Image 1 (cartoon, helix red, strand yellow):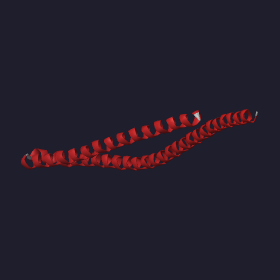
Image 2 (cartoon, rainbow, N blue to C red; image 1 turned 45 degrees about the horizontal axis):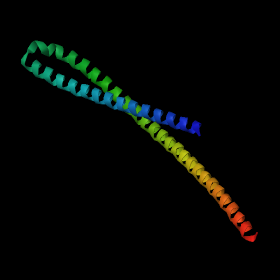
Image 3 (cartoon, rainbow, N blue to C red; image 1 turned 180 degrees about the vertical axis):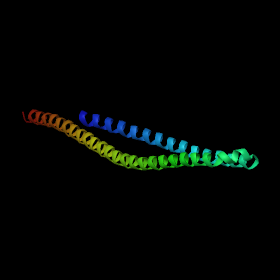
Amino acid sequence: MTALVDLLKLQRFSLDEKRRQAIDFENLIAKLTNDVARIDLIMEQEIEKARHQPELQRSLASFRKLTDERKQRLLTSIAGLQLELGALREEMKVSFSELKKTETVLAQRAERLRLHRERRENKAFDDANGRRLRYRQNLSMA
């Protein structure tokens, strides 16, 4: 039974680790999404500045190209993280299912042990009552 208890602890630990990793992925996705929004905002600000300052218009095209490349890398990273997060969630479902199976097996074993112990106690009680009854019957016959 201790092997099952150890397995249960290991499964809980593994599931908790996967949950922490999923939270980290979600936080990273949120951060990268904010970075994309910030890049869009910066680009809008630079376009507005370039409208009023002709010397900035010459460098705007290269700046736009760099920011678009950066934005594309961020979007690619977000897509990859979302795929990993989806796979991790599937692993979490499987781990949770395995954890519940182990908990069920442990509960069933505990119930069997309780019933076995109860039967043994009842048998001992019945045996003791049977001896007392036979003793009384022998006394009354004598």
